[in-house]
Length: 322
Image 1: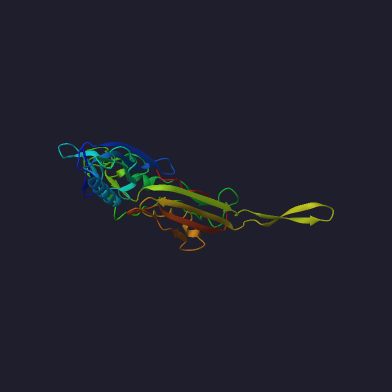
Image 2: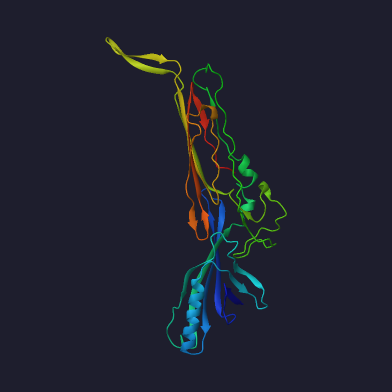
């Protein structure tokens, strides 16, 4: 087997030990959405004297100092093996995360051979993503929660006031990362889910990783008021007496939350009581994504809706989609 990194090719085949490992990353709901692929390499450069050892050492250092290159292990017939970290379909690029280092210095080291070590890593969309909710159609209909007015305290003379929670609208990602179209289920660094012409449960197209992935979601609904208002009046000859001041008070509610989209900003859930908003349009906050290598991740959005109504408001928060 022969290794290739970018434009650098190891001159001697089968001269290195190549160790593979993968690790899944899970979102806040425990769903895997990223697979980290890591290749640890240790080997020896076959050299002819000190000058050649020094030249080959410098060439290896120069080659591995370049980031975001393809790393491929070729079979003896020249075809690519399953050990390949492709830069174009990775999430943040292929990176040399350790080395090259040259740990030995005894004997004929740096004369007839030069021992080296390095680690190359890349992240890819998890191969299980298209098979797991929340994806595709599950996002559109996967929200619970809702709100209504005038329940539980007093009769509302103005009739029904509220709407209900609606599904979260997920914007279409204009630049989805496309995985290679092969029939391989999962190979190290070259992950695919089969033929893109077919569809998967939830309406997800195999091999695509787009803004439908939400890695964190939470929402809180707080309500108060809307019922009678009482006060206690002093009594000269006894304990204070409870007095009804208003039979119906102003009902208030607050609906706030946040969501994090992996590769795009998700749209916030709809207001539970759209016709009772105190401020139109309500406050929406989008935060800048995190730069990760060649890409951006973690697009956070926050929302806060304040309501007032001539009666009580009762509502439940939306749920994480899926």
